[in-house]
Amino acid sequence: MNSYRAEFVAGRRGEEQVADEVVSSGQCEKHPFDEAAGTCRKCKGNWCADCLVYPFGPRKAPFCVNCALVAAGIRRYPSR
Image (tube, rainbow, N blue to C red; front, side, top):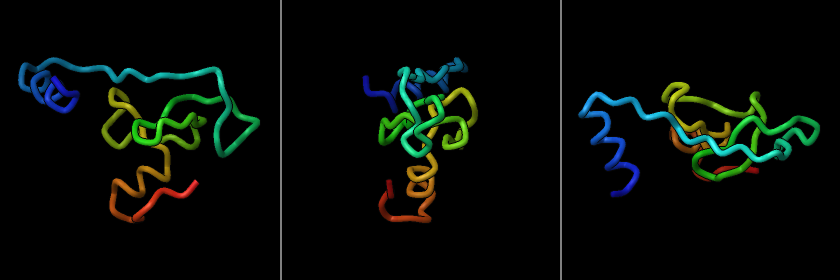
């Protein structure tokens, strides 16, 4: 079962699904002196807390700012 189908089925059952946020002990890709707080769900890059956006709430995996702008239709391609 793919992840979108699993989320749909879990939502229909009333179950809450907590995002599997993979955090490596790395550095933020934009701020090299800050520790990574999470991983973007689309580009899989490590980002600090200032660079992550939670458009669907804290229980879903976050986007980095660039991928969030692409997902919202403001930009066409993510810039790095």
